[in-house]
Image 1 (cartoon, rainbow, N blue to C red):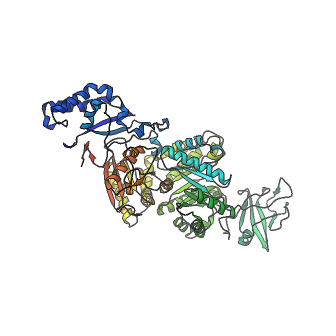
Image 2: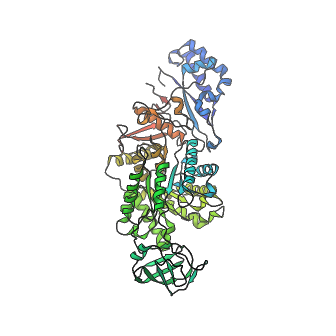
Image 3: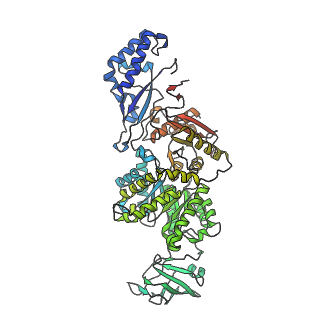
Length: 638
């Protein structure tokens, strides 16, 4: 407390005032003003009667909790924000404002008010993120909102199915849910990629191939039979060599190339089975001289850039040049003034592991997806877990987010509970250090989309609460780069561990600082505050990072004081640079996410000066949740 500007604290638990808390403060200062007027914040006998009046009318006035809460908060108390724990809300009220309570003005708050945390605070406490694919079972707003509340951080729009207009409707719904909860939600557009298929057969039911027989694949458009069928992909015939393997219908039929001529391949059937019209063909031993982007993909990519998806997932990646190709197309077709989406490479071909290809692919893109469906077809099943770990380790080394996908909770398409093997599979991906895990048909077409997302979150929470988990993350932490940003992040993590901070707060423009923080896998959440919604959405994919939209002061952005506490409607306006306001913004955002619930909780804040310099991180500050000028219950007011 400073003599010239006494501060009174009113305390709220679960949106209700603790009457006795304020009563004790006022009564204590009333006695102080009677016997030691020079020490009393009421400033003498005349003000003593004002204090006495407060005591007399206290029961009726103090119970009006709304008087202490900014009006913007009173208008948005959705039941969906229900918290599992009580939240403490600090309000600082000057003596003059307390005196004004006698005329009904009690409750006017000073600029040190802190808004209440959202009641879904537990929603932000996991580190591993969740992707949910949207489809027929999850296309309405109610279901999408339920999936978000159940744990989904990113929604995947699969452009292999449905029209472009349907994807735009889904994106609009995602943005609506994002606005309602004032939390960034990312949208990932997944390109279909080339589909390599055999032609059609004379028999509508197809043909059965017997082990050991010779079967020809050629360019003849005539319908196939038990001896041959058209393969309308000359690039496969050209790239295949004697001894190469071809897999049909997800590996159900296995062929070995035993002869090759102009426009045909003769194959020996090693694993027999039924083959029918338009079944897929995989080429695990060949690198095909084709683009990963079909004409349909190019049209879909242009549409994604137009509607503003946050991530673009590229299928059929064989080599680093494929990533360079999609970057060139994005440069060519990105609308003027539009924010560039991040590119995610889907690793599903064995050629990605030849030489330094994986390292180069990870370096060229912004994220990686372990697409275990096709990868599991083209690689031996016993190799897939090892390749998964190899991909995750390379991504962690380079600080790029990595998603593990495909058949994670496959049985929950039909069943409300997963198998024990599936639960172990999800847990293994988390223990491996994946940034995110994904659901495909489980959430897109299954009977239990919400339950599938909730089950993933339960597994995440259980694994991350295991004492071995953090030690495993620490033991596999990559060596920091010799850069100022890495030095600041390493120091911030050490400080947070030493003082028991509740979160590390990073102010970032393009997301670089937050990504470096995520790479170190800190023991506390990373709260990333960016003035760009697009950056915030892209950061949603990263382990332990929870982005937030700024409201006041940071990066020269400012809003009205009432708007600063309106968690449902982030608004920014031009203002002067003010580092103190940056720190206040950190406290507001941490409370908005429920990362702090006590005025003495500490935050480690990193930022870069001058503001607006991408990648600059050169400041560390430790601040209490009550605000940068409040320490140990004492607020220092300039």
